[in-house]
Length: 205
Image (cartoon, rainbow, N blue to C red; front, side, top):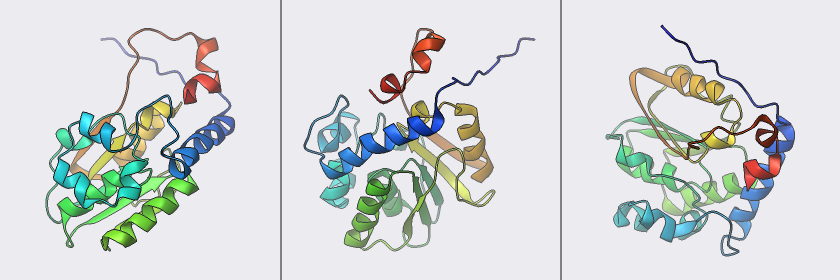
């Protein structure tokens, strides 16, 4: 029987979080700017989001969408479900989930970037969906009670967290027994040197 040792890069965590906040604050403020990653409706369509879902979300949330996958492709969200969206950004995935769970369900989006949270909350008001809320926190410490969620989704966030095991443990903690998890993200297929793993500029760009 073999075991895998999980190592955490010795990166300046607060420095990394600050750089990530700055990057995604710019995506919130100036979505038209153009970034090294894709954004907006064209990205959502490329990731095969249902066009009717995109149309139902305020354009202000869609324009700052910066995910890397489509978490709705691998999990079924039902009416009445409770959903946590880890790294909710401008709120597109959270608001889509809000439409799927209906007024009998509830969605909590969690993000650490103030500008994204402001944009997401405004989009929720514009959409008139009262059962979607947004909370400020990091993925490693979700402000959600144990066993609260039927479903946890996350899109393009785990790769930005050095301690991925801590993030996954938090997702597990907030899920009910038998709950469902869907993560859309990116992976590297070759080992990355320790020196490279500590470079904040490479984490964010």
